[in-house]
Amino acid sequence: MSAKKVDRPYFRSQVLRLAATNYFPALDEGVKELVDSLIRVSHGDGERAQQIIDEALRSSPTCPTPATFEAISSELGPRANSPRGCEHCEGTGMRYVPKRCERTTLDGDGKPYVYESYVADCQERCDCELGRFLKAKDKEAAAARKGPEREANPLTTALGKERRAK
Ligand SMILES: [Zn+2]
Image (cartoon, rainbow, N blue to C red):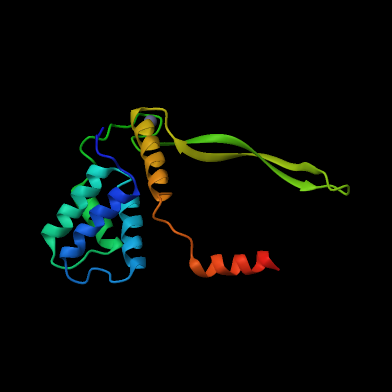
């Protein structure tokens, strides 16, 4: 496991290294898009994110797009330190599990009742080493996405205030 602190500001700092390239986004929205994409493509793995940016800087004078991140990541191949899957998930880290699902509706008195119950094949992370590894990455990526950088949209905030004042 990497000892590096991997939260949203970390991924943002990696993206900001691209300021050395041509056509780096002038708008903050563009930078945010790159940060989101880098988190997604690297599965919240800080070292992987750094490798992707290293490669982007090495391979082209032009600022990469989210699509470039995808391409670089598949070129780099599977992460060297990621564990292998098992026979249950066929090496993918994802397995199918039957889950009982219920559809509910309201009866005449407004009380909820189950009118249909069925079993669906749902996907979840496997229990094997790879599944647990990916689950931890999911959590890191989710935490990174919720980072402090995501500020409120000033327009909708103003509208909300106006509405509340009425
Ligand atoms: Zn497995």
